[in-house]
Image (cartoon, rainbow, N blue to C red; front, top):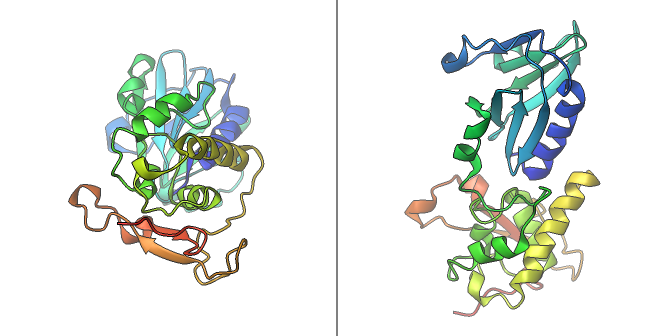
Length: 259
């Protein structure tokens, strides 16, 4: 699943392509919004919050979420699309370019004042201008017995981290992902590390994984083979796929918590 850095950079590309320009075509290929016509509307801004993306006019906000396989691509008008047209769920065009959302997990048209219904429950945006480390820390500590590997993935705590960066953050802080939040010696430092890592991934791509998806390869610190573990598999309230739950770590640098 694309993480906050991918959505942030996608918003930057769409901002360059669409912001300040008038739509000459809007094609919503989802039943609920099939009759929506924004031709003639000016795109005023494009922004992101965590894994959510917003394309705004004066009156409405087009909210999209990439989910697992979604992508936005920008083409010159008349250029052949590089993905199957049948997977396109939204097309927004002006006199110069077409922005096409392929396999988008969610498409919504909201009034600008309704954006809070989508993101109001989320924690602070790690890549937002109003990043609030203290609020992220407060939310994390509300459930001190929850494993940090699950807490980081919960967008209600801090928005933007997915499966890749929770592994990387825990490794960099030498914290086993199963460690309860309340047992972490320096949780503020881990929150700061989260901000640093996602910021670096967004502004200095590409992020080269240190431990993520590197099972059985040597730890860059001590040479021990990287391993992986599933978290939350026995929690009925946390039913996500095993592929999503897998987290990578060094068993030596990140010793498991004591019972």
